[in-house]
Image (tube, rainbow, N blue to C red):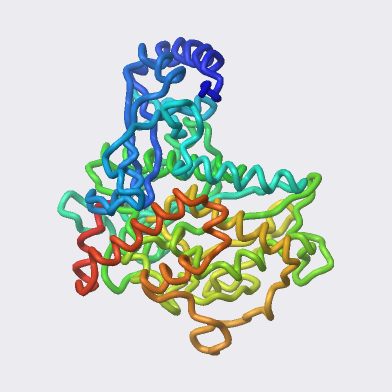
Length: 446
């Protein structure tokens, strides 16, 4: 079968890029992807090899589709295990020198088969297909993902115990936070907010909304940059769902707005709080599918130590205007362009491409079915008892995922089965272990 990606064009783009990178003192380029356990994997090439890598890709073992959080592997549904190879092809449109890693550049990568067709297990490819399905409806999506992290000293102790959102944290770490801001800005990202968060040692950064695939790419770039800046300051970073047992964890809140012909459909419409019908149907579809979507957006055993009631984690399948205990928080904003919906139940162990792609697929199903949102939940559902609890454990989320014909069709058989195998294997890996042991086991894996 002929190569379907444009090899010559990629090679020419790489030659041009390499000239500029060489002038910037870049020696090597990292190609990154995210596995089904939510871990970032990379390969790199010296700069003189960039053209060849862009043209032909770099070998990447398909077994990482089945890797777990501890680097062990689930059993392949196909039984092939370590057999075969893929090509890791960088997206040079997102190629960027890394401001906090002198001499290095980075690009997200797509995974292709050896014969040049898209790998059906490529998570980034899934997100792209979902975004293209939205565009075929004459719609577009603007998305952004909040990045939360805990920063710790060399001993693993949170680097600050100052008050949540407190100015003291900024004073204690002002040089560090300024370097984070400068590095992100130098890489072409528009930072909207950078501030202390709730848990000990926790901070958060938000960047401007983009298209769905671009938002997932940017999330990975932000995480890499924060980690690199932290290392330069002698600090360690954790994106694990929970850093300390019983504490609030690291969310990966997805903000999303649906647009048509330049109009934000979350503002100025005839529905509740200004929703247009398409936006309500889209959000209703995502809300209906949330139990199964947790297998993508809250993927680990530790995820359910974060996803608990009255912890601002969105543990109930409900929605509400500015309701931070609802899984789906509607935000009207002060201007038409700011109105959006926030999915609060997802965490930083999630593969952002799977998370975004799954929400888009569920939203489109809501459009097809003409769904409407249920009655709004105005308060804390844990107190009012007015909403359904989302799955409280990974096995419960797996059960919902296995019942989802929607996600099976959207992901495709190979990716759907690989995700299922990884989730089942991780549930078995941590079965019967104390919560504290689970937290410790994954604390430095993300």
